[in-house]
Image 1 (spheres, rainbow, N blue to C red):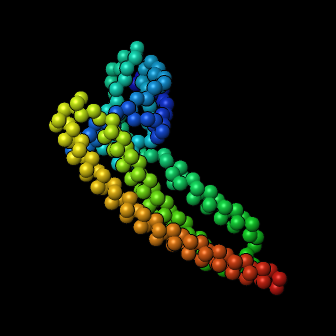
Image 2: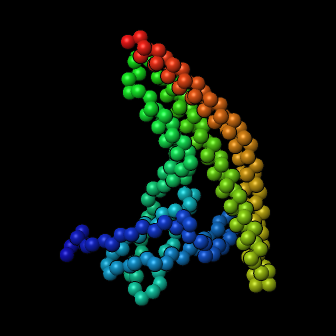
Image 3: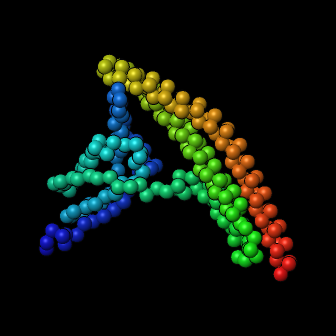
Length: 224
């Protein structure tokens, strides 16, 4: 069998909700270790796609180790585009947009020559505002989780069992990250208030445009 005919066994693993085994802090980086169990490795070439990695990860820093009865002779890693789409991150907004689509489907396919551009423009503005708001909400949620993780990790450290230099490195990282995430949280809070109002205004504009379109279309249909 030629090299091109060698069967490659493929599998996908989603680590989005997988707990972190350990984290090692350095002044400018943090090494995160996760243990993935239950992967079925078959004889020959295996291609394993790991989903759910942080998009900001340094691809060159990824390391893969195996254990068990199988012998791994070679490991090659590469990054691929994330499959996660907007609807995976913000399903609530997609549901809202689906509801808007349902409302549109209730409209007659025949617009009787009435211009619908104002409705389409208002809808696009509403969706853009909702996505911007969701981005700030995600930034705030991430900041809260990072702060919580730092606090939990710091509380789990036993000073008597940790080298003084490593403890100093952690404290430096802790101070820097806590300052950064606190600023992110505060900035996001302000932006969330602002964009919540913009979403509300955009939705009102969309509702007015849709109501005006319905009224004009109904009037046009009666004239026929």
